[in-house]
Image (cartoon, rainbow, N blue to C red):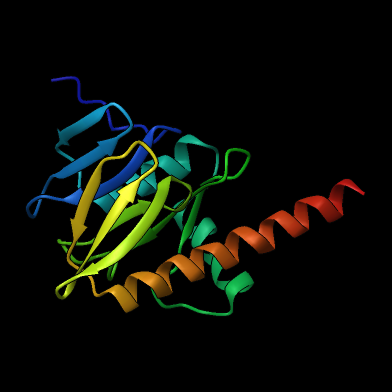
Amino acid sequence: MNHQAYEIHDGTYAICANNHYGSTVLEEEGTYEIAENPSHVIDYGCSYFGSSYKGRREGAIQMLNSRYKVPIVVEDSQNMIFFPTGNKDDFDCCWVALNKIKMYAPQGKKTRVEFINGESCLFDISFRSFQNQVLRASRLDSILSRRKQKSMS
């Protein structure tokens, strides 16, 4: 059987575990079920775009001075930054694309996220934790943008 891994692209909004082995991928055009777990998809995405998950993670840790639920720059020219909703190794962890979020709000003990295409999804993470993840990923994006501008001047 020829199995090809899912390739993250600009239309990928989120990758969520749907059981211990597979994922549900939310894209601009729809939702898909795949066999890989979310961490494998992020790892493959980093490799696909010429880096490694470990290298991307270490770079983000250095920039943010934090090791906790570190956002990952999967591809930097298109600002594809994904952040985890929990520990990356937890079977129920989701990875969310920072630049695809339109708004988010608390819904009970969870967080409802509306994406830029108008679709929404309920994530099993508190509003405060989700907001912290958005802020951490935004800070990484800001640091990278400043560094890119500095290197171009």
